[in-house]
Structure formats: structure tokens, C-alpha cells
Length: 60
Image (cartoon, rainbow, N blue to C red; front, side, top):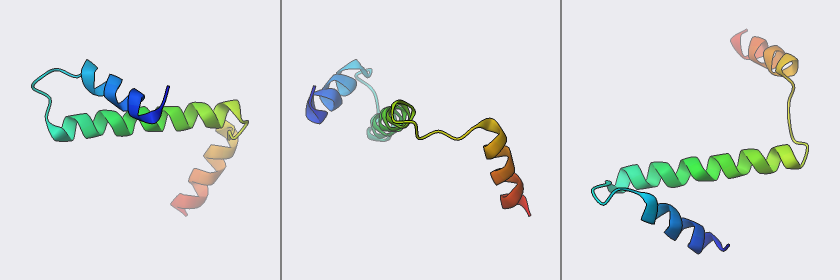
């Protein structure tokens, strides 16, 4: 499915009274999920332990 087809499908599933902003949020959310799933499939993951260490560093 092409990007245009995916976008069209997502828009068609939204209620008729959806605002422009609501549709944009849905599109952004869908894209974030796709990127996350792609990262998982390609082994680009961080363990909970490693993320905990990174968060500790941010809080310093």
C-alpha cells in the first residue's frame, strides 16, 4: 500500500465531523507507530535497564 493510500484510508475511518487538527494528530500517531514497529523489526531497541540509565543521566 502506498503512503497516499494509507493516508486516504486513515482519513476515511475518521468521523465526518473530525477537525483538521484531529486528523493531523491521527496521521502523526500512525506514523510514530509505524516507525516504532520498523525499529523493532530492525533490532533498533533499547532495554529497560539501558533506558533507566539514560533517564538518570538526563536528570543529573
